[in-house]
Image (tube, rainbow, N blue to C red; front, side, top):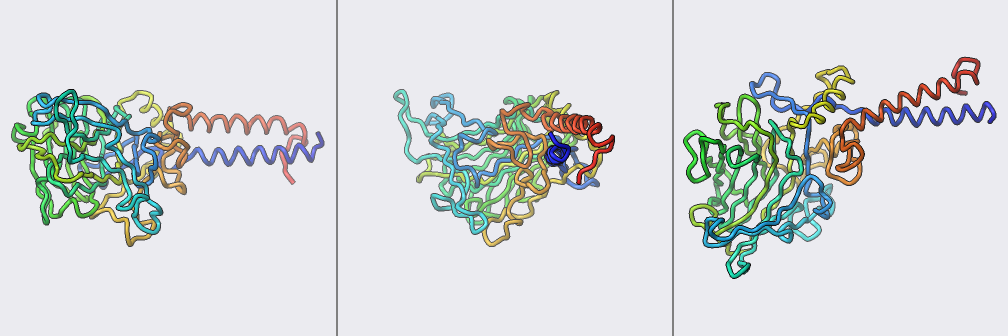
Length: 404
């Protein structure tokens, strides 16, 4: 091969490798922070789970969530009706074009609908009400900030739950009963399940709070959130603090996962119902930023953070939702923010994201390495390859690698 050909080939190889090396670096290698640095509840979390439900066309493609299918007979469900979850109760309605408006392809607001039909279903000779449940695939969440964009049904008689769960004695819970919603207020049932607490109906003082928030949650999209740090568990709506628990002896001791439910069992003491109409809970997103209990995940974070010097400027601040999330009448940059949609900043480097392709250089779920250091392996391969090119070309250009 002529020297000029070698030069051209080497130039293309080096350029390609440099491009790859630049793509495996991001801006958030040291984590995602919540609250201000002066806040006693300031925390940095290493991992994320972000699901933008306004973009999902086929929910079976979302690897962050596992739809649940199960049945509880009326006795086990503690109501006059049994409870059953079905895949058919999970209905995506992605946006036609969010840069124009929030309209979904089936009409109405874009997002994921969890349905509770008004009519009961007979299963094994007994009456059941159908509902929906989603469990996060990640079950290694220990500490974190967890957020959901939602709009409740207008029909009384259902329960919407969003919670972190390990077991019945380790659970951080938000539940909204559609019968507790009126034109001006919505009640939030906030519960910390502990070995010394109890269920929603008989929780001990200090582990259960009912908070009134000044809006009708069936009228527009809002955000619910709870933060769990070593010093406090705090609940929020639309970025405003609602309630906090600082007694750390009540906090969970083991990792868990997220659960989203929409259901009814006809029990007048809780869900009420059945709903008089086909009840739809609309979800627009879930954002979770958390620490992982998985040793490999912890090592991944340590490696990628130390590789950039462990600098605080590689910690990305999580935007706080202030007021209801807005979708109409705003610029594209004012829509709810997702690190995993931020291609310009490469803000989810080495994270596992729900798409079936790499998004913002995060590793696709189930992909090679499953996010376990795969990005740094690429970077190492780039360095080795660059040195190989350098060593091969040195004799050919008189000991000096030049491209003209």
